Length: 261
Image (cartoon, rainbow, N blue to C red; front, side):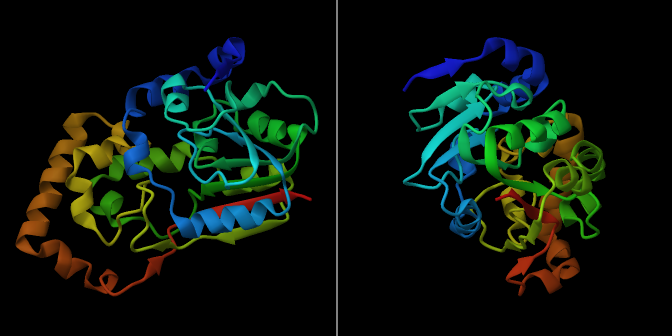
């Protein structure tokens, strides 16, 4: 599978994000398994599109089957794990395609990694007639207990790093925002996936596949995880969060933003 490369774009617009995912991307595909419920939501949003560009594609999660998908990512490590035949190494801010080249553009949990989100979102609109962007709203009130009680540093970092939902909707001129409450058995191991499975955060492989956790120094993460381990052993976590144990899903602020036609 050939990887086309736009080295100037990847270097100028995605150097920091590329370095991060070149470091944490190994093994990413095993932990970040696409969840069929989110996949169905994104596929429905793409509608009758036949050609799709997946910007910040990573290992190819949520690309609908049967469509002609071009994967774009600045990280070669991530693209090496992508099973598709059409792969382009480039940053979101300089997509190497002509205007209107695709029926639709998709971007899943990636906009916050772009050095210039506004420019990247403008590029999505330039190269496609329809856009579907899955992101997290940093202004959403409900926070994951992991960040409230154990790693406030991570919560603070995410709220400053994630692109405000108002910016995403404004730059895309979005017409619809769809909430996505996270199911308790969600298979894609991103930020809040394990809200009802706290023992999962004890696994260093799981933590390594989360940019939020992998970006923090071990001196911060390891003591916090040790406290969580002890709280699980003693039953303190279960007592504090008994209300979560019967919940099927929780709205932690994930949103699918739709734009175009």
